[in-house]
Structures are given as structure tokens and as C-alpha cells.
Length: 516
Image (spheres, rainbow, N blue to C red):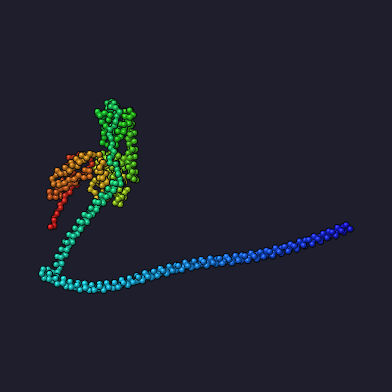
């Protein structure tokens, strides 16, 4: 019974459980349906809301598009109004121009009518004049007895003479104006070149004296039986002058480089204290090597200062030797550097090549470095050296012709000559007192004035040129040429001067009449 009761209870429990499960399933189904209904309702509400929002957004976009369209429309309308205004303005302007054209056409028509009337009147007058001229011509032929061809020939001759006279006056006028313009321009070029390059007013000078610590050193320099001084003079090629002057030994020599080598060697020997023939030869040899290196250094520095490239080594050496050469106490190397810069500045002012000009200016006096070794004047020697070194023709001719008659087809030579004169004659370039300078010029002029027929004589270019004006009545071309040669010969015989002096003699005939 208990088992049955247990089974019955178990069955009841199972049935109750099934009922409970069904109740729970039903409850869940109802909840699910309710939730589904709520979800559907919520979805419908969301859809409705989204629909309203979409409609609202569409309306807003439509409103914005409409507003933008209205703005574009207004802008287009304004542009159209502006174009219409401009078109109206252009139309008014065109109407005004058309009105002006009509007025001008009327004026032209009136002018043409007046011109036609005047042309007709002028034609009538010309016909009348031609008739009167023909009548007068016939009358002149009858009075003068000349044919028409003869009268024409005489008239043309008179006109030709008149035209030639007028042409001569015009040529003289233009030549005078051209000469004045050229002189002003040349002065401006020279002044500008000098202003652009300001050189020192005094130049270095080489010395040929050596200071000694005491007079006892003179005996050591002379040596036993004069062997030291003879060995020194033989090794250096100079003369050593030892006199009573206290504290000084004088070194004398024609070659400035040798004199400088001797001075330096003697100074080294005095400082060393060991003075004997073998030591003298050793010191002189060392000093000679130092001098050769110093000469090359000075030459290279000068070339670099001017800006020269590709200069032959021989020319560099000669440039360095110019450092020891002076003219009227003016250092020739510094003079050459100054001439180079002045020539380059003037060349650039007139549109020529400044590099060629500076090269020609620096090398124009190169012959002075070798004029004691070769025969001839330094222009010819320099030209030969430059030609052998492969320099261009302009540079060679500048060295050859900067003291001779200048040719206008060689502009660089003319510029070098002008720069050379500026450098040599400017105040302070050469150490010479004013009294001595004036006296030298007066002596030059006095030599020329001593010849018969000389009217005036002028020493120019710091005394390097003499211009003589002679009387055309007392001399002829042949006698003038002989007089020029005699004046040059007289200067050579009567005066002492360095370098060369150019003599130019002028003989001119002039005639003057006064129209009253």
C-alpha cells in the first residue's frame, strides 16, 4: 500500500510538475507576446519618430536649398544688373564716340573742302609764278646775253661755293664740339680711375749702407792685406767703400739686386763675427738663394695683387727685380702696380677689357729689370722679353710704345701711356724738391728757346716731353725737322737726366680776317 501510495504520490507530483511547467510556459508565452507587442509598439513609435525626423530633415534641407538657391539667384540678378549697367555705360560711351566721330568727319570734310580750295588757289599761283619766272628769264637772257645753260652753270657754281663754305663751317663747329666733348670725357675717365685707386704718395727706396757696431769692425771687413774685402767684392760683384764715416760701410754697385745681396750678406757677416774668405763665399751663396726666392715671392705677390694669371716664370722673376729698381726715387714695381690699376680702371670706364689693361699696365716697364743686361731702351727690351714669353700682342705693344708716338688703333697702349704719366707726375710720387723740379723744367725750355725761330717751349709730363712751337715764317718743314733733331741732341749734350725725353716740334700757319 505504501508503494502504491508512493507511486500515486509520484504520479501526482509528476502531473503537478507538468501542470506547473505548462502554467509556466503559458505565463512565459503571455510575457513573450506582451513583450513582442511592446517591442512592436516601440518599433512603430520609433519608426514614426524617425519618419517625422526624416520629414523634418527633408524639410530643413529643402528650406536650406531654397535659401541657397535664392542667394544664388540674387547673386546672378546682381551680376546681371551690373552687366546691364556696364553695357548701358559702354553704350553711352560708344554713342559719345560715335558723336565725336561724326563731328570729326564733318571737320575733315570741311578741311578737305578748304584744302581743295587752297590747292586750286596754289595751283593758280604757281601757274602765275611760272609765267612770271619765264617772262623774267627771257628778260634776263635778253639783258645779259647768256643762254639758259650758261646761266644755270653760273648759278650752280655760286650755289656750290656757298654750300662748300657752309659745310666747312659746320665741320669746324662739329670738330670743335667733338674735341671739347672728348677732352671732357677723357678728363672724367682719368679722374675717376685715379679716385678709384689711391696709391701711397711716397715710394720705398733701397739703401746701400750697412751699420757697423764699431770702427774696429772696418779692419775685420778689410782683413789682412785686404783679402776679406777682395773676396767679398769678387763674390758679390759690388764695391765696398770704407771711409772715415763713423759707424757706416757703403756698398756701391750698378745692379740693385747685387747691391742688396751684398748689403744683406755683409750684415750677416757682421752679426756673425766670423769674416774670412770661405765664410764670405758661404754667406753670399746662402743670401743669393734667399734673394732669388724673395724676388720670386715679390713678383708673385705683385701679379696676384693685380689679378694676373698664367704669367711666365721669367716675367715673374723680372717683376720681382723691379722691386729693387727706382726712377727718381720712385719704386718701379709699385709704379707698375699703380699703372696697372689705373689702366684697368680707365679701360673699364670706356668698355674695354680690364684684365688685358691691367696686364699691359703691370708689364709696361718690365724692360727696366734687364736694361743693364741687354742693349737698347727699356721699351724695346721689355717688348722683346714679353714676346718671347708668349704675351698677347696688346701687352707687347703697350710695353714697346708707351713712350713713343701713340696710335689710336692701339687703345691699350694709349691707356698705359696715360696711366704711366699720371703715376709718374702726380704730386709725391717722386722724391724731388720743388726747386729742383722747376729748375729742371726751366733748363729743358731754355735749351729749346736758344734755337732761332722758336716762339714758345713747354716741358710737360714731369719733364719727360718737350713741346716746341716755331715760327712758320722763319722755318720750313725741312728746317723744322732738322731743328727738332738738333734740340734733342742739345738736350743730350747739355743736360743730365734719367730715362728719355721726347721732343715734339709744331709748325703751323694760321690766317685771321675780321668781317666789318
